[in-house]
Length: 124
Image 1 (tube, rainbow, N blue to C red):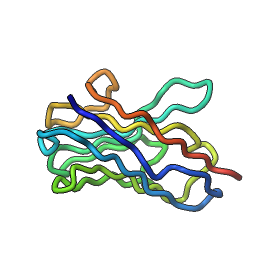
Image 2: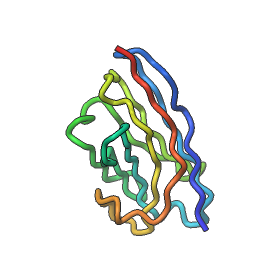
Image 3: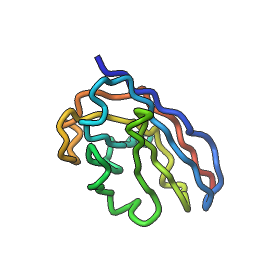
């Protein structure tokens, strides 16, 4: 059983930064691809970013490219999402997810395990 716990969300003004963390209780964490997704009120969930098992491959949604950076520390079983130059449209619940295959994929259906989510609110 894999448990994922997100932290780091909060309320910030437009243009500021937040860093999300996702701690995983997974014996094979360093073989998993890890992703971040988000869901805004009244909208469908969307892909944000994904990182391969060793951090060598990353993908981003066009809407966050150049502003968000995904990274991981396998020694700490943790994946991060550094979010810079935040915009009101980034407001959403952010979810961490684990894909037990090492090759990063962007489809939510590829991810077997999900965290509870952390709220990010960006005011204008």
